[in-house]
Image (cartoon, rainbow, N blue to C red; front, side):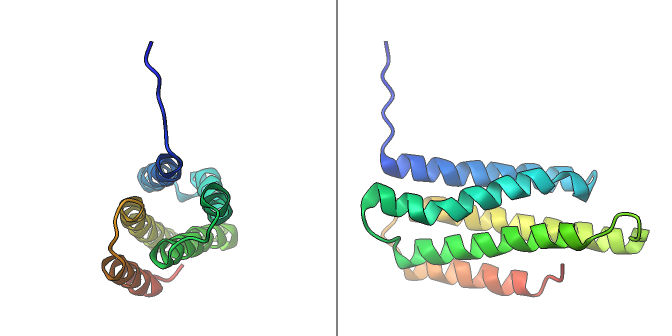
Length: 147
């Protein structure tokens, strides 16, 4: 019999992998219909919102700066998508407005995927400035996207 042992860091990393997988699924499904991704976005937002407390519970100390910055940006991006979907009225969107919204949501989702890849790496890396630079770059790129 094989025994599997996951460390607390492995569990935190797996949570981020789950959110990245949700972002990848949402990005694919948004090509079909942006309004069907709401449930996954809400699930990812909830998981991300709980992570800071989970980290503190697991390790007895606050998250390092780069992890906290990445997580906060992630939460903001998930929330932006949620808010855009809540504001959008499918009946009142013309084809052009729908296509623009779809492209912008998919752009934010791609940024989330890239951010989550970086967040996964951060858990096992001692680099700080490198990840802060990545986070700031993603933040600047997504600030230009109008939802």
